[in-house]
Image 1 (cartoon, helix red, strand yellow):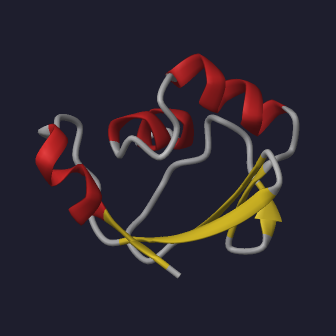
Image 2 (cartoon, helix red, strand yellow; image 1 turned 90 degrees about the vertical axis):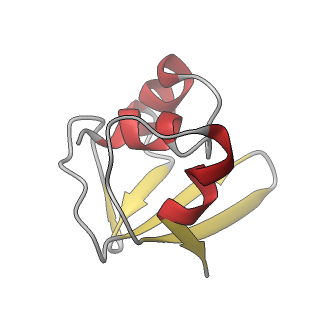
Length: 79
């Protein structure tokens, strides 16, 4: 699954266009490297998102195309 879509499906970032723009601006890194929106997310990847004042890191636990709102937080772990 594409990185921008993963960020949207997991609700880490609310909209896919915002996720895409964050990737283009270099504010999203995967495993310590700046990643493009087209990066293919895999289980075990560590995603770092820098938005606003803070920086948050997540570990990918699952990848799924369609997820209910209640189950979205089960797809990643906050580090």
